[in-house]
Length: 239
Ligand SMILES: Nc1ncnc2c1ncn2[C@@H]1O[C@H](COP(=O)(O)OP(=O)(O)OP(=O)(O)O)[C@@H](O)[C@H]1O
Ligand SMILES: [Mg+2]
Image (cartoon, rainbow, N blue to C red; front, side, top):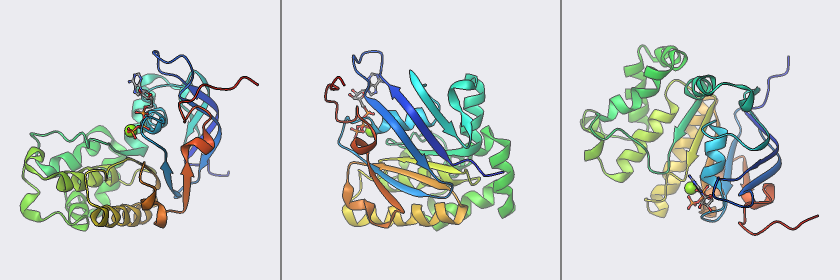
């Protein structure tokens, strides 16, 4: 049997309840397994909205979104939650770390919500050993591993959030503009680390940014307005 792609979107449109016209209208988009794509578009064009749809957090009004061959709108809310927990690592725009929890326990959170990711993290000996390996790989000093997340700098929090997205080798890693707080040189270094670790885990990566300069090392670069009619925020022309 042919493996399904990591992600597939077909004839999908979505509007927030307050919007008269769809902010996203995508005829076709596909991400192969292991493929690493850079997705860019201006602020407000719907990038974060698209990621919420890919994660099954919200559902489109029309069309289909498949994650690893599962059509999201055919799943119950709890099945979508389980699919996301097992197979998708999220790196949020604001990181969403639990501030009072030590860095390493933030990294371990996905293993608490998914037996699959817990088992895959065991390949390093234990989930904790895998969390330590990832934090070391992302250059977070061991003296900070047991520091609460709130006490870390923005760049350090970002690396903790990246380790959390990667732990347990999810097939899909989704990163929403995680570099905006860093200077250009550190941004590129962080992107390179994320690319390397995604490749090592065999994960497909969707990396979203409005900063096109970061596109260089990805397999593919996609402008949101070339796949979505709604992405410019302009009213749609009637056919
Ligand atoms: N929860 C929401 N409820 C209603 N409208 C929303 C909601 N979230 C986003 N929008 C609207 O949807 C459009 C796309 O927003 P979105 O956050 O996806 O843009 P973005 O491309 O991620 O922007 P940025 O680069 O600033 O992060 C905007 O017009 C925004 O006002
Ligand atoms: Mg956004």
